[in-house]
Structure formats: structure tokens, C-alpha cells
Image: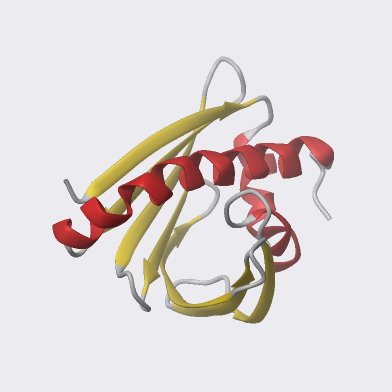
Length: 143
């Protein structure tokens, strides 16, 4: 298995959820519980570079190099993780009865790597979506 999928319904409009992808807000919610971020570059556009360091609750720093491979406002963001482990994350936003269904599909280049880190990735993805929902609900208007 190389692809991990999850989804979450957020009681907000697609536009309100998409607004949480601006650099300031993205820095607040990106990553698993307990992590913070320092963004060096966040060019939120097709082909834009996204370079940042995740600071873990264990005190370690985790550098990340990414490219925003595709942005289709307000319904899709594709992130190509260029540093190890290499993966492509596709996030889609669709209207639902509750508000917005956020679908998260993370496709790793290597099945061996995906298998080795599945125990980290699966709960981390859930925590990431929890943090996104909290950010959107904290300030639905953005900013």
C-alpha cells in the first residue's frame, strides 16, 4: 500500500476552508498535534515553492521541501513533498450537507517507506485534519 486516504467534514463553506491555506493560517494548523512551523518560503501558487521546518514536541526540527504542484481554488490543493519521504498529497474540498468534505489522499513513491511509516502517517493525517477544522472554526472569515 502506498496511498493513505482520510476525510473530514467541516461545518463551513468550501471558500472558508480554502482560506485556511494562506501562509499565516497554514503555519498555524499544518502538521500533527503538538507541532509548530517556521515557513521560509510559501509561494501559494501553481508550481510555487513551500519550504519550512516543523518543530516537534520532542524538540527536534524536521525540514520540509515542497512544491504546490496544483492549486485549483477553492476546491483542490496538490502538494509534492520533494524531501524524504517523497509523496504527493492531494487535498480536495467539496460541498456537503454539513458544509465541506475535505478529502486527503497521500501517495508515497515507495511502498516500503509507506509501510514502514504507516503507524505515524495515519494518526498524523487525522490530527492534521483536526487542526484544519479547528483553524477554520476558530476564524471562519479568515485572517
